[in-house]
Length: 64
Image: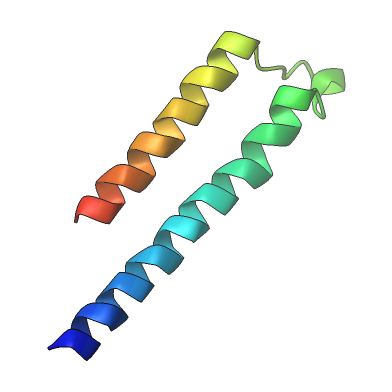
């Protein structure tokens, strides 16, 4: 029982790490202006909203 719970917890931890890393790989360069030459730029307020959404996504996934 405890081993199964530990494995499920570890699996969920890896999933959440994947969500957070995927978000960071995409959103941080956008917020920094990496695609500015193509007209894509996130405002600080929008970047903050996306960061909050990332946190909510990870929290919801952790609760499942």
